[in-house]
Length: 368
Ligand code: SF4
Image 1 (tube, rainbow, N blue to C red):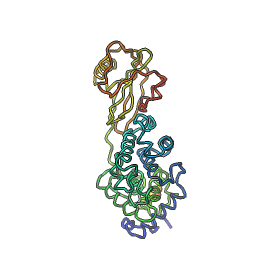
Image 2 (cartoon, helix red, strand yellow):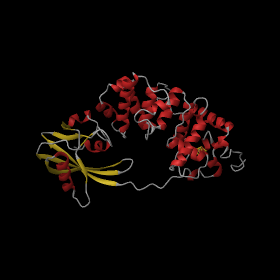
Image 3 (spheres, rainbow, N blue to C red):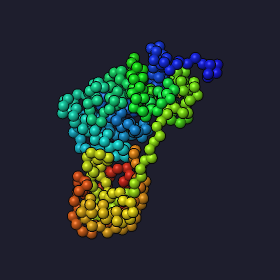
Image 4 (cartoon, rainbow, N blue to C red):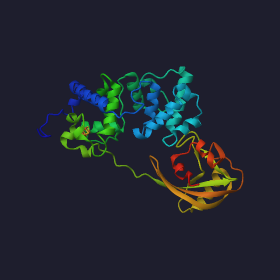
């Protein structure tokens, strides 16, 4: 039988109870057989599931797993996390990015201990009340830890669903996203919702990948409309991305008596609570030296002598990219005041490892 001749469900059929049940079974059976064996999977402890789900937002399983293991080892329960210093939590998160996740974990742990006597939220609705927990994370924790039929929808699941129903609209459209939530809501209802949700995510990560999906070994190929129609390469449709801005940033590694001046970023916003070397964006037409003098004067109120260029490193964030131009500088005069930071410290190089720095700073620390 050719691909065109095979009897496959119509787009409406996935809405029929019989097809939903068959599809769910195929996903769950495949997940139990083929899920990647990672240490944190299999637990129903809501605390551990929560930590893993937060760490894996925007992060690949291979990258996030060592962080999850270290985090659970150091903070084995919500009371341990709540009583920790935020600096230590950020240090453990160092390198994983999206530091608001770590700050929110810490804030939520304190709320659970202070307001709920340490009792973990036990439903998607209760989880949605916690800082840093959105619809996806609430559904993942509630379904995995408590067996609640709550849906999840992340990038992987969106891609699988768009191919499954051969969706000819952009998955970036909020109305389409809402429709996909409804579809997941109808699919997740039944036995083992946690395994079903994880199976959908795992299928997107392992088989129904963005490019070159493994349709030949896909456990739900017979349900897939894009496969039948031959439209897999063009699914899902995406809205054209706006070009991400790029900034040139000058960084001053200011030395005095063998120590470097570093500042702690304010708690909210990008990289909040992390330590960094002072500096800032180069304005149009400005030389690096002029930008350094201006930024250091504005941020710290001191004067410096600019020395050799140490390195230029590139780093990409989700919505912009930077080139960091790092200069060795000597302190000349003035007492540094924390105008752009919550705290300043003069730190010996051997003590850098005690502070949490953004990943971009790590790219030049060893060169100082
Ligand atoms: Fe994805 Fe191919 Fe499976 Fe369809 S058949 S769900 S496109 S891997």
